[in-house]
Image 1 (spheres, rainbow, N blue to C red):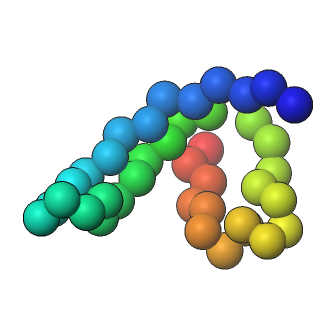
Image 2 (cartoon, rainbow, N blue to C red):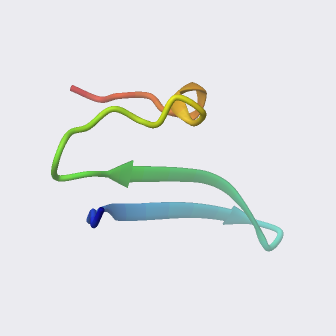
Amino acid sequence: MTARAVSFFSVEAGKITRIVEYWPESYDAPANRAHLVERIE
């Protein structure tokens, strides 16, 4: 599978504190990652 996304990272003290991703093609997150996802309609 190939997918494209635009990702924005917030970094504090050299560590990633937040990631916001925009995916041009909608699909459900894999079951083991679904708890990490907030879908924006």
